[in-house]
Image (cartoon, rainbow, N blue to C red):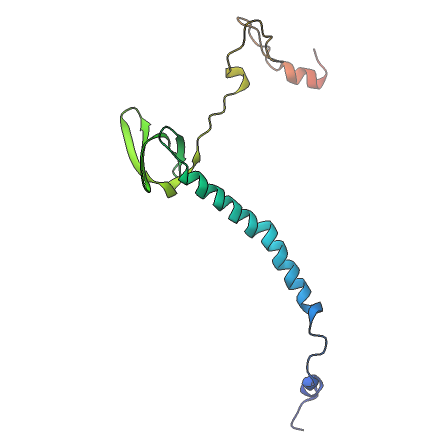
Length: 140
């Protein structure tokens, strides 16, 4: 007995190795491509376009979270004013994005004769504490 029965049974080759066995691998790769790889490439392309479009006067956020205004651009280097008369030089690659200030609706100036927002107190009137909570719970 030189050959064990287990080796003898598999000596005929591997029948059925074909498309059926490769299909799960192809599906997993397709899922990874459309859910992970492609969106990441799209974000990288948009970020690269944003970096090349930075100009003087833009407000930016750096990788360290510093917000400032671009005062000078030279090739791959930006001079950013982060406080009055305080300028730092950063490379374009350290910029995360353009800074967009979002003002809350209550902070926006109101037009003449415009009614206050729902739940907001009129000028000179103290807001009722917990009024929305009371309404939700059925109180007045």
